[in-house]
Image 1 (tube, rainbow over the protein chains, first blue to last red):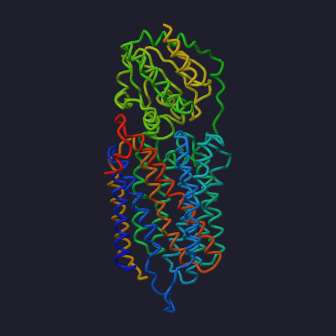
Image 2 (cartoon, rainbow over the protein chains, first blue to last red; image 1 turned 90 degrees about the vertical axis):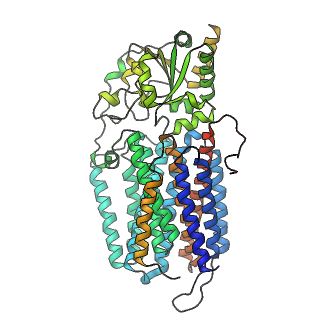
Image 3 (spheres, helix red, strand yellow; image 1 turned 45 degrees about the horizontal axis):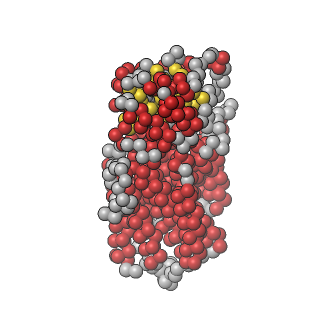
Length: 467
Length: 105
């Protein structure tokens, strides 16, 4: 293929990514934006097979290698990636994104390593520096993403894992990574790069372990931005403008997105990132467990709802896990039919990530107008008779306002305590994802209905029919 | 392959940073998750780099590493775009518009 045409196509792909990101930031254009990005990426993948190769140092024309192997690897990748993306439950989607990000980081590290071996002693210092950067950040992103996956999938504890002297271990590992990086740059050779890669993998694990469950989405977003930068750095080594532009775009937009997410969750980015260095082992709080709570029957709940003027439903991750979106909509429809004013109060981080709950409720075709964002719903709670909290906990926990130093302190919450009555549908007294006790559960105006969210809602619906 | 000058690379890099900042500066909270997922799919473009390296690989070790990279990058790119599309499919909001109407434009 003609070199100019090849580079023009590369430019078109880079522009498609800009349009994709632009489209993805507004609801109306989001889906089209994603499709534009996918089209651009497909084009780039096809075109690269026809790349002009030039000549090697001895003047012999280069030839294509391994085409069959490459196509086979792509086919396997599609066979793994597409079903995973199609079949995943919407509730488990954040961890899938984390995994996809991790394998991307791993791919960047492998690309840089292979090219480093290929260049051998012919690599310039700048190229070695870029390689070192890619391998360090790619490996960190890979192992860090695997840990976030394990946390979100609840295959390991969602609480911060902090061990005595942990910060020294992390600092030592980081020093080791940087030291072996400098060693690689000064001496070249394969052993230093290998040791460095291993240490970077370890660093990724240590970096994410002390992060609490509630902060995991921010870390995924940050690792995502990191992976973007590794792609840009490999683009430098491979002399590919497209990779430089695409990687930098993701790195820059990912950084902004990470900051916005942290803001929406009321978290300090610094605190999240350097939690590893500042976190203290958490003390088990046993004081609250003996106090009594008021638990009610489905009939009690139905009566409370039946005589209300205004009801706000606060959905949380528990609703999603129980697949209770449709039942909650049925209940809302019944209440609306009785002339009761019903709204859904959506916390920006309800679920596992910003915007996650909107996706889940949209799936159950809840009317968009009934979804009220936090800033709009909060002033209405004093006029609300009943708040029905379905499988949510941290986003309504007053500790975010009253307990300095607790993991969610400073996070904006839904002020459900302002309402006349609060009903919690919960599986158990177990604390929420962030692992903090909720004082509101012991409040006099609170009624608890224990059980799976869907079962409880079904019982409430039939109790309401019987009234 | 002719090499790009360092100055040109620096220029491209700096401009891309600003474009990256600018395009997402007005994103609404509800779209944070799909945007992250879409950006995640875009960095799957490392697939192109992986193919370039695999294409030029001459020994077994390089080939193995590069082919593994192709596999991982494909999962990242293809899976990323598909899962983002699934998320956004649910954002259509308006009741029962025929499928793919958005996509067909």
